[in-house]
Amino acid sequence: MMEQFVALATGPLGALALSVGILWWLANRVLPVLTKYFDGHNEKLGQLVSALEKTVDAHEADRLLFTDSLKSLSSRVEKVEDTVSLIAKKIL
Image (cartoon, rainbow, N blue to C red; front, side, top):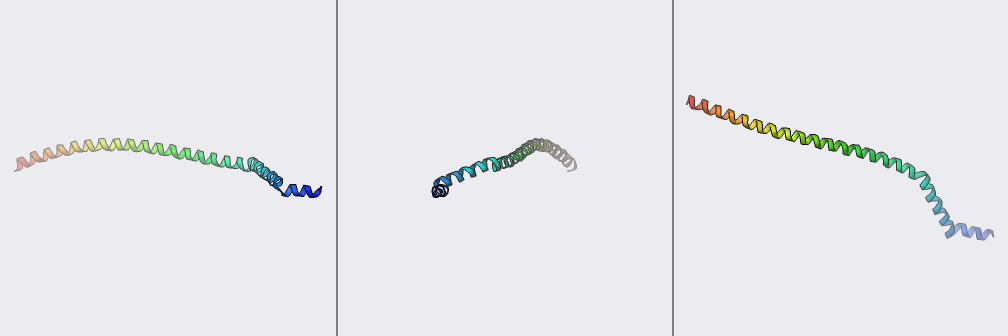
């Protein structure tokens, strides 16, 4: 009787029972810790994505402002060129 029990415990049935026990332990102990860990990382990743979106939006606004400034500067330079041209004509 004892030999049969030892043979079952050390054979495939024992390995199956050990595997089921390990899986149960992982599901009850390790899985909640991993879930909490990944939820924390997911939240941090969400914050990073939000910050990146804000940066892209700010960059787009800066780009539009820069484009408008260049257009304004271009028209000012044209006015200065015209004025310098008039002054040069009067002097020469």
